[in-house]
Amino acid sequence: MALESAVIVKKHHGWHEVTLNRPERLNAFTTAMHKGLADAFAGIEADASCRAVLLTGAGRGFCAGQDLTERMDRTVPVDLGATLEATYNRLVRTIRSLGKPVVCAVNGVAAGAGANVALSCDIVLAARSARFIEAFIKIGLVPDAGGSWYLPRLVGLARAKAMAMLGEPVSGEEAAQWGLVWKVLDDEALMPEARRMTAHLATLPTQALALMKQQFDASLTNTLDQQLDLERDLQRRAGATPDNLEGVRAFIEKRAPNFTGRP
Ligand code: T3D
Image 1 (cartoon, helix red, strand yellow):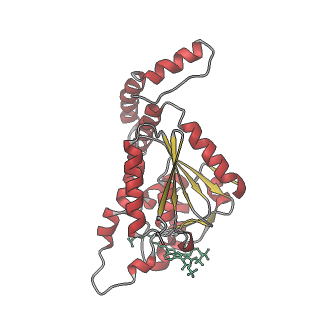
Image 2 (cartoon, protein in one colour; image 1 turned 90 degrees about the vertical axis):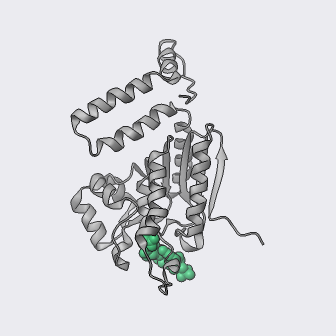
Image 3 (cartoon, rainbow, N blue to C red; image 1 turned 45 degrees about the vertical axis):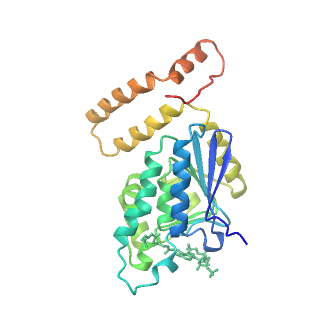
């Protein structure tokens, strides 16, 4: 019997849907899943016809973080710094630097690194039944996969620290109220809306979206002066794309634009 793949990539017209696929373990990350994700994102990066990505989980959970059964063997010393660098840090950097928007549909519980990988995506939608759990403290660890960077910026230090220190679940509803995610949706509405949104993003000016990713990431540490300089430089690049001209022409000609996403 063929083994089911830990990551499934479904290609749609203009966009790819990436599904974490270990539902019996709430899609907890294994070495095989990290390899599957690295391959999936490498393929997406190389495929110019793919202009947007949707990340979600199979079954009732989004992702329960690291598969703890892989961390039971202590007969050799474990260096979690080394595993982070090779897996989660690489994944988060890949998502953030990908020149295409990544939508995340948090379809259920998102715990530990599972929550923080979700927060690494560009637009996060949560099902009403979703739970975000910074579960690290329950096993004596600290937030990783970018969580200690995203959380204070998204929800403020008070909520970030309490989420990390208490490890209590934050509901989809609270996550939307707090600004942790873009929107909360009824469970049955989540995937149709996530797919509609990703397909729509795939028709937008891809280069401008890629530049926006750079712009907003830099804004989190830049001064206003630095950000004004960056806006000047990135607008110069956006203004040189065919999609800028197409957008202006379409407006003047009172028709829908046909963006190609080309540089
Ligand atoms: O190690 C490194 O590389 C460092 C990086 C670490 C990153 C991290 O993510 S550390 C944090 C790891 N994650 C956790 O500590 C979360 C552990 N899971 C839970 O606390 C709970 O499962 C949830 C709150 C996420 C969900 O609870 P619930 O009641 O909805 O489901 P459940 O019954 O606990 O889980 C369902 C099954 O999935 C269950 O298996 P079973 O009993 O049906 O055979 C459970 O053991 C399994 N499962 C859930 N999470 C994990 C897991 N198996 C392995 N690893 C998991 N993380």
